[in-house]
Amino acid sequence: MNLRIKNIDLPVFQKANIKLCIVRADLIHPVASGNKFYKLKPTINYAKANNISRLVSFGGAFSNHIHALALSAKDHGLQSVGIIRGESIYANNPTLSDAHKAGMQLEFVDRATYKRRDEAEYLQQLQQRYPNAMIIPEGGSNQYAVKGCIKLAGEINDLVQADLIVVAAGTGATAAGLACGANNRQSVIAYAVLKDKTLNDRISNFIHNEIKSAKVKVEHADFGGYAKLSRQLLEFIMDWLDKTGILLDPVYTGKMCMRLMQQIESNEFEQGATIAMLHSGGLQGWRGMQQRVVTLNGQETWDKIQAYLCRDIS
Ligand SMILES: *Cc1c(COP(=O)(O)O)cnc(C)c1O
Figure 1 (cartoon, helix red, strand yellow):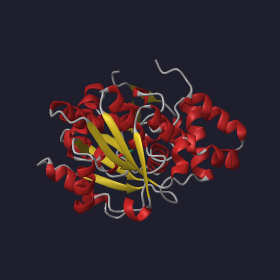
Figure 2: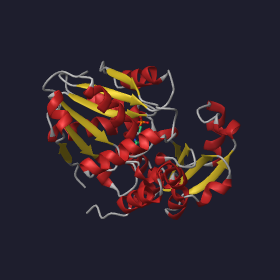
Figure 3: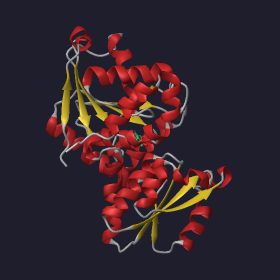
Figure 4: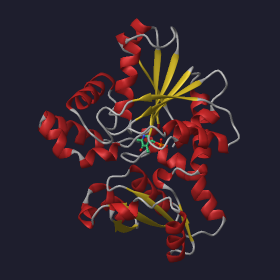
């Protein structure tokens, strides 16, 4: 499916003299993360071209990456293995049952083992167990992922002449790719949803490995910590849904957008600027938050979210 954009016209943007458009990478799949498909595409192409039959990667029990990896591997006739942090009781959650249904083999490991996911010795052992497999880092964030997001920047620029591209960041590979693929009049802001001081360095490394000199500005947007849903965030997201008809996800894009709106309201951007905000998807993450949503805001709010998740996107 082709990438689409939607212009958002709200009084607050007129007042700040800002144009905002949403890049709808969320429409690539009803609930999976759109940016993960862009990130995985070059890895999958590489695997297929090199007769690699299996993809192995890591993630938490509600991981957008694990979810998208399972679906992509299935689409391309590849086998997949998910090394999951936590216990097998999670196997029945919506994220992992989707992954399992797509044919992914799930392996549950304790926190200590999971921490070793980037260690050479551990990766070697894993490679011995899965000889004809390609091991992909957490979040899908290898150098191929950066290349996939360079392509995404090209697709965005074919649709809109934006001064600023804004994106939610976990590992920073998506932001790095967008920065490498942006033109020299554009800047990229990465909204960090993790309380993690290494994001700047990680983005710089990804960019450096492309032999590029692009820059990304990091803006903090962790709002209480990774995957923490506060009442303020939930109310912001529901208000945004009412005003725009678009549901953001609770872990990444909701936080980015909430911070971005604070910045727009305090006139932090240049007059007349056009901002392209990437909706990277990730709506599947809502399904692990039913209890939390109902507790914070009641059943009616959950019903609205649920209805959106089941909508027809064709
Ligand atoms: C994974 C993810 C991100 C962050 O991507 P990184 O490349 O790890 O920075 C942003 N938004 C959504 C919806 C995601 O699933």
